[in-house]
Length: 440
Image (tube, rainbow, N blue to C red; front, side, top):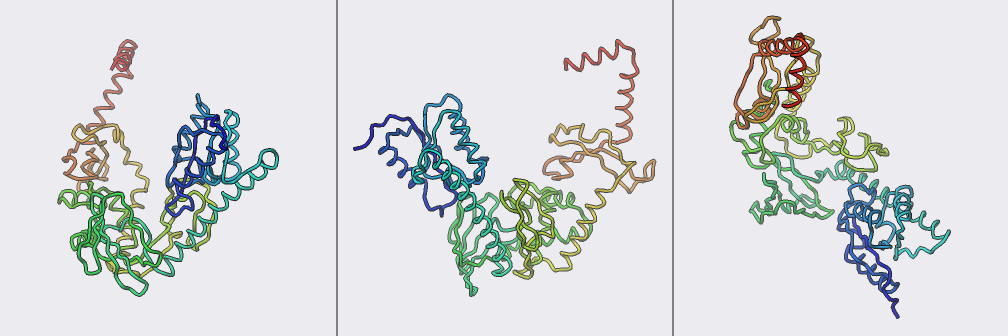
């Protein structure tokens, strides 16, 4: 006979991926049945779907549940399928949250684990917490090893959006084309069959699952996109910088990968991507929470959480995998040009002091004014004519703002003279200026 429902409780459920052994409904059904048999009344559920349990950070439902437990709670117990669903953060993190809940007067029970009460239960709980953490560590390690094998052995492209100028093609191990995916500016994807005919348009945010046996190759996209990338590299080799290329593309109305205006960072990112010389690269940045990886495939415990750009020597690269969009010579020349511009930008310029840059804002577009030089004119120091101009125009071109140049020396002198008048004025004038500033 079922026990009368007397203890108010909430349920917590979590899964990491679609392949999780216990889905959210499965966890809930098991816990609800257990609760009905043991005298618990579930008021509501807190659910984190498709979220890793290696850290409490980022689990919104979990954090709301902890906050509710510590602030005017209406429940006395949390019911969670097992320890691994509650946390895979290891004994330290799991113990930390269990202790906080205990101080708040809230019990946490894991029906599937059947942990006994008392000292024996505490020992088993610690062991299960450690096991849950080790499962995540092993899974992360195996996943990274699989990615390395995918790049170096199977020579299959990594996941994510295809680089601009390429489509993603799914093939069998013997090279038979299965389908081709093309990313559009609005985030949707066009799917083409083996014969190249459009099969369907996939809505933004919908992921496409692939079979483990599929080999992914990058293939040239539309002639227009390919031409844009080749032109970008040609302009770079000819000596034009990312600012100029972005402004030129915006002025000509060329659509960027995401549909927004081109900017310098987007241009630079594309120019540095080895995919355009026919190579695939992985580990260009680290996003995982457990491990980082060097270029030799050696795993290291990750010290800093979050996104991190990796040095080029740590990239995992396979050369000559697909059709390049530019020659090896053009690629090498572009890298040399980009590196030179970066080095020149970092050089000290003792006579290039900027008094007002970033302090003036363009009324038309809202971007800051920056200092520039026109070296066709020697200027008073032989280092070019100095002027302030709108950064919106320089970053994006006429699509965002018009060209506005203000003479640097004259404007600096005007501002300095105004400052001197205030600082060297009598006490009453200074006090009046301060009062006016406070009331402005």
